[in-house]
Amino acid sequence: MTAPADATDVLIVGGGPAGLATAIELARRERRVTVIDRHDDAPGAATLLTPRAAAATRRLGIDLADHFHPIERIRITGIDPDDPGMRSTSSRWPRLRGVPDIGYVGDRAALVDALRGLAGSLGVRELDSHEATEPIVERGFVRGAVVRTPGGEHDEVRATFTVVADGANSQFGRLLGTFRQPDWPLAVAYGGDYRSPLHLAGEAEIVVGITDRAGAPIAGYGWMFPTGRGTVGVGLMLLSTSPSFQVINPSHLHERLLDEHGLRWQLDRDPVVAPSGGRVPLGGSVGPLAGPTFLIIGDAAAAANPLTGLGVDTALETGIMAGDVVGEALDTANSAALQQYPKLFDDRYGSYYKLGRLTARLLGQPAFSRRVYEALASRPSYADSALRIATQHLRSGRGGGPELLYRIARTVAIFAPDA
Ligand SMILES: Cc1cc2nc3c(=O)[nH]c(=O)nc-3n(C[C@H](O)[C@H](O)[C@H](O)COP(=O)(O)OP(=O)(O)OC[C@H]3O[C@@H](n4cnc5c(N)ncnc54)[C@H](O)[C@@H]3O)c2cc1C
Figure: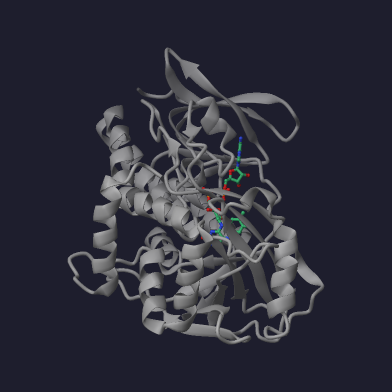
């Protein structure tokens, strides 16, 4: 169980939001932590940080208000079928005890910088531009990783426990035997940033009812995120459940989004951050989440919300959870503590994600999604409820509209075949 003197207690593969959250939690427990990151050159496009992301960073010791642009409201906009114009509703973030009712727009790179600064100040060893190429396995137990250094040499980083936080493609996770359910929904996100005099707006906009070439609605949404630093992020989150998903070209749809909404947002079409995209695995579609000496967190664990495709908040939350569990395993010198993590993950997200996956499938049916998107853009009470459900701001023990609706749907989902 104990690592050699020159080794680290915990090796974290991937220094994104998830891995750094675990590192900070463990460093606070005075554990020796090493984070390695190969630094994919992810462009710093606008990212919506939900109130739950704000709560998680606050717990870690970072106030997002010190770094990012506040977002007080969410506007849902859609096409009105009875009127050639657009309709929209505006909602405040739902209130939930222990969670601030404010979100932020920042960018992933700036969030990572803030987390890295904190981790470094707590003594976390960060190996930049290092890539984990394969796990070190001894008598069936993972004991760290072989890493490629910036000079191209191979070194070993040995550790008592390894936390895998290597993001959506999770090649390191696959080497440990993780598997993504191939027929469960995933999302493709695609966005860039554009200059706009409206960059200080306190309201982010979600555009629903985006259609494919044949005019059928696509499951997903467009976004306009004012950044407070001269630009507005414009992008798309597309769920894989639409029949036309395989043939959709996100860059064409993105152009159309800019054409339809660019004037309202007074966008300069020359991008400051060129649009780019990637896949987001959703809804707990990856497993197993734990082995005898390792855990899988964040996008590597498909922790992102299956309704919204947002994954920074769940990356931070699963990172904190893993920090607690690994910390306990080290404190008690008992690696069995790691086996609590899949259950904690399931308690927190399991039934919500199952319902989310089923809903994502329903939204893939144009007749259903057309009605839902029309209602969201024209009825404020529906939009408020949808925002509460979609951001998982459900109040336990409350019989109010969204909670009641959610409980009924969850009961139905128990009897549904897995989505
Ligand atoms: C275009 C786009 C827009 C998005 N917008 C939003 C948004 O507005 N709000 C939101 O909440 N979510 C958004 N998401 C999702 C969000 O970015 C992810 O859910 C979140 O970043 C997951 O954090 P993570 O730490 O798990 O993984 P990542 O942020 O992907 O971090 C993984 C890290 O691991 C490193 N790594 C990978 N393999 C190795 C290896 N072998 N060795 C060493 N290092 C390695 C990478 O360099 C990377 O730094 C978006 C996603 C995309 C693609």
